[in-house]
Length: 384
Ligand SMILES: Cc1ncc(COP(=O)(O)O)c(C=O)c1O
Image 1 (tube, rainbow, N blue to C red):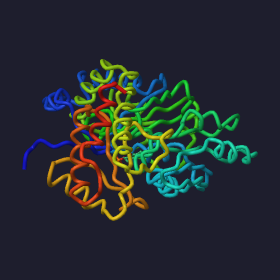
Image 2: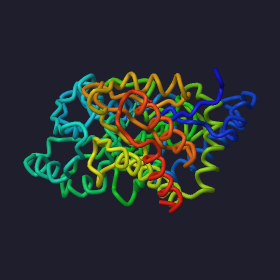
Image 3: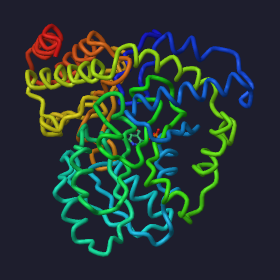
């Protein structure tokens, strides 16, 4: 098989050659001066992407490790937490919080629907005794292609002191997220998404208010103990051996991100979203999310009646070496997902849409070949 593949997953995403070359560098002493300089440089760079001056910690773990770090560092067993869940990763927060002994209350939405900030306000207003210690939600719910309005949820807290913990693993650096301006207490990212490096690093921002809870939390923690991460960071180190090669990659990817500029990056991702939506409309494909809450990082398309997600995804791989994702959990068999975040360009996406169109046609779906690509191409030509 050809090595050339068009990877349109919502993570892991393609890695720019510049980043791959950077990751090929020789290992260094992780407690030496070069590692210290590297750690400080990438931490400052990540803060820019998070749009924060809060503390940021880069941990060696996949995104779920970052979620676990967020939970285990603020919870005392028995604490009440509110999880606002509209997909598979919302459910993950429920599982993690339960694993650490929290008393979990869930506001649950049908998968594919966005979070309604008024519901959060309602739940917090009811909590007169301020028993709810933290509210958890996803910025971008990767399993459904919904972008939640994090700013509005933050505002919906009103005077309630609950921390706001945001899983921005697939949203950061694809859609705007302003940690400081939106008053977000803990925000979690993952390396294999719009950061354009392989899986294995997660970064967390921690507000001053969150620190107060970190100091008091009594849930078990060891590897992800942020107090330890802070102590070591002061010496320019991490408590345990970090994934140095990924850190070399992150240094390079941050240069690429900051050279392009966050505003431009967000616009580019918006354009990808519009390309997929235009193609879907032209092909009479139904999207899962409402347009106004559609994700700029991943688009979920309902599997047309009579077709199977497996056939579509397998044929795309076998015939064209194009990789897209199936649905997860409850949406398994019902949707296909096209990732369009990070190191993707408009032509990758046009190629993916072309392959999808031909595949659907061959599987018996009645469409006019070329209609989807033409609509997407128009969006690309207009630049948005
Ligand atoms: C929104 C979101 N949260 C959490 C995760 C879990 O991250 P990981 O698979 O890196 O542990 C993912 C991964 O796709 C994600 O998209």
